[in-house]
Length: 431
Ligand code: DGJ
Image (cartoon, protein in one colour):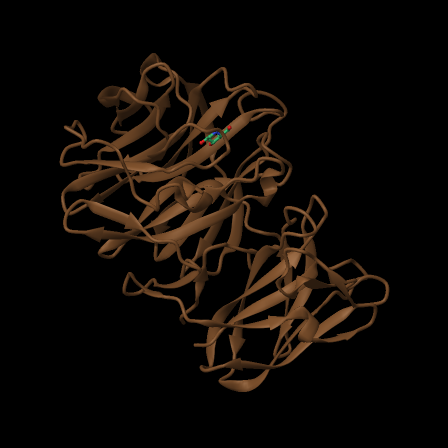
């Protein structure tokens, strides 16, 4: 099965909610990818550490909340619990999770450790500490080919550290390298004997031009830091979260934080391109297609656009104006008591294939809206995140099956009287 993985990840297949796995890492286990990240449904304070699974990196199923809010302590109300990362310890047959643990003003600056016997089971929280006695905020983990593992930790007074972990991975034992520079969101990728460290500069929730450095040994010498995406593009409005090895190259996974309502934050995943031994570049793309079997990827197909105003409207659905929408108009009053409904017929695809639609929508609420999206009669409940405002559309993606030819039909409605988002347009892959 081939899918078009879009830049913006959307609803989990089984929750009716957008994926909430921010600051995430990925661990592969028994042929599946597990994405473990922060639930920001209700803002920045700790709620859950969520785990989703996928076989193709495109469609994600919610598995479990690995850690949940406790009445008090490190995982209590109003706590900072960020950037969970999990690695497997072969010697103890245990999954080990590290997290950034902090008070709401980021004053404690510690790491927390949790373990589980299964990758997405309930984790047992062991407590928190300052690694080797130093402050620790953003973290990453790296497991080397020989099974040795390392904590990547941002120590604000001193810089970015690589600390070796004990054989059971539960403690830090010694410092391996210290950059006298503040770099957040650290992530290491190893390729052809080179270690590549990625990270961001310090600009809070706002994105900046992220950088990388490389070395043939974790203890250095490390190269000077340099940018790996278009200068001034703020890493395509994202912050490094994780680098997933992918065949000859790797996939950059970043967070596009929305600080005014963190549940609106989305995910920017793009293939990294490695030229020669150490030249890394990240190109911005609307879409691209990963192949999990061969660990390759291909550029995404071109798309046709269908405007909301060109659809057949029924129930209470009406056309309204929206300055940032295509054609300056949007279709509103979808769903609701009058069962507003929008239907595109004659939607063309050049292939009979599973693929991904991108829907541009407006949602002026502070929470998700839901709609039933029916493609050739197969209905899905799709979550639509709040948009910036009612003149700037946001994007949702919907995985579906299209038939070759122009006999495809897409319908957007609700069946429970709730309001769907307003719809600007849909992008339909051609192949
Ligand atoms: C940047 C960090 O990378 C995030 O994880 C988060 O801690 C924000 N700072 C908070 O401002």
